[in-house]
Image 1: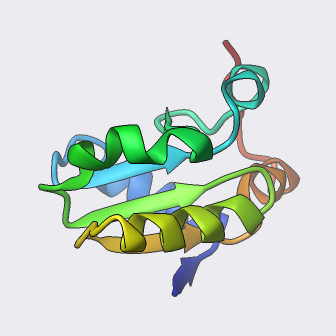
Image 2 (image 1 turned 90 degrees about the horizontal axis):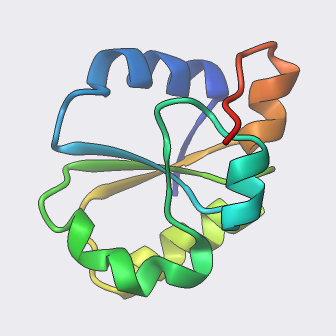
Length: 108
């Protein structure tokens, strides 16, 4: 499983935010996402991945993160099992690492 740091994620967000072949997802719960999330990353809760699988069919790369890194690894395994062909990239440390690096957080 390919993994990147939050610093690398920040760079990818800057470079590919408007690229429709790249997606950035947060697999935390809806409540966790509302409380704290990385700006520019959309919410697709882990327990709802199967309902969103069609959204990934035309993607070349999907960056996946959660609060600390555990659920994002599970999400990548689930997406692979659901037949997603995009390159799936885990963001090491998730939101906690993002916050520890002093990067801004969004709240809803």
